[in-house]
Amino acid sequence: MSIKNLSLFGALLLTACVTINIYFPAAAAEKIADEIIQDIQTLEPNKPQSSVSPQRALPTWQVSIYQFVDQAISVVISSAHAEANLSVDSADIRRITAEMRARFVELNPFYDQGVLAIQADGLLTTKGNVSLKDRNKLNKLIAAENADRYKLYQAIADANGHPEWAGQIKSTFAQRWITNAQPGWWYQTANGSWKQK
Picture 1 (cartoon, rainbow, N blue to C red):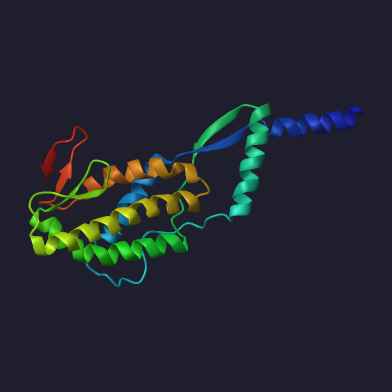
Picture 2: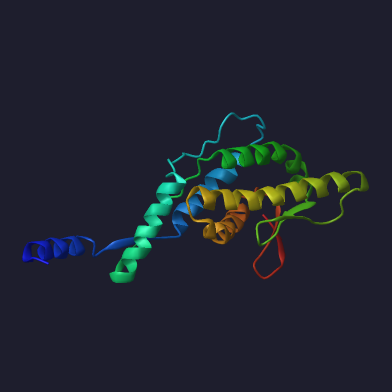
C-alpha cells in the first residue's frame, strides 16, 4: 500500500471516528404521547386527521442500511450519543388513533361515572360497580381500547425503525395517560392505590 493510499485511508478513518448511536428519545416520546392522547380525547369522532405534527420517516431499507453501517463502525471506533425525534406518520398510526378517537366518545361517559379507570401501566380497567346493562358493552370497549394501545406503541416503534422501543413507548404513554386524565377520572398510582384526579 502506498503512502498516498495509506494517508487517504487514515483520513477516511479519522472522519469516521464519531458515529452516532440513536438512543430512545424520552423527551420527544413524552411530547408525542401528550399530542396523541389529547388528539384521541376529543369528542369529535370523525375528526379528519391527527393534529400531531408528522415527521417524515425513513424507508425501512434505508434505516436497515444505516443500522448496519452504524453497527459495523461502532465495532472499530468509539461512539457519541444522540437522541432522535420520533416519527408518528404512518398509515397504521393514523388508523389506530382514528379508531381510538371514535371509541373515546363511548368511553368518556364511563370515565365520568367513575366506573372506568386508568391502571398504572396505562391500560384501562373497570372500577366500582358497573350496571348489568352496561357491563358487557364496557368490557368490550376496554378490550378493544387496550388492544389498540398495544398496537399504537408497536406502530410508533416500527415507524421509527426501532421495534425494540415498544416497551419504552408503552411506559412513556402509561405516565402520560394519567397526566392527561381529566378531573374526576380514576387512576392507579405506582404503588397500586387508586386516586381520583
